[in-house]
Image 1 (cartoon, rainbow, N blue to C red):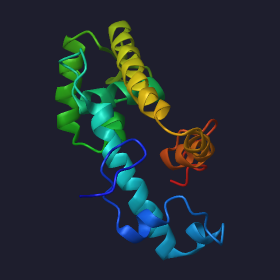
Image 2: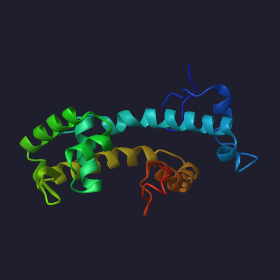
Image 3: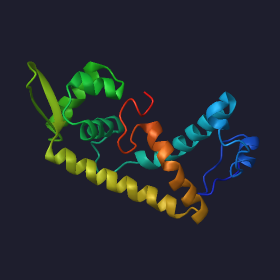
Length: 185
């Protein structure tokens, strides 16, 4: 039977990695300068994210909100009005798929379309009032679920998680003041 994490979830990391989970590195620069250490850190981060995703993707009260639709709403909230091609690029999906999704979201009243002032042939897509409300409700719901899990951690692990947030935000490109250059992209 696999070892359990501090939150009670199965730990799928190799035994060597699991035994050193809380052990400080003898070389603080090792993860960034040693490719093997960086690969191990990346594998552990991927596994942790993979275990958290079901918590964040659990069915919400908004039955029409799939993970890809939530991603589209979040991208529009974060980046402001976008052309469909820009949204497709941000989401990493085909333009035709994005166009169909926006048609559906617009039909639900979650997005709005208006002419692009720079090119009247193109449209800009933005969140509608209902889309902002849905996104806020889902974010609140997911934050509450995640807060419950964080609350189950020891005070030391909560402190360490807090200390790791700047690095995680930089990886995600969401650090305060981050842009594509500072996020390493």
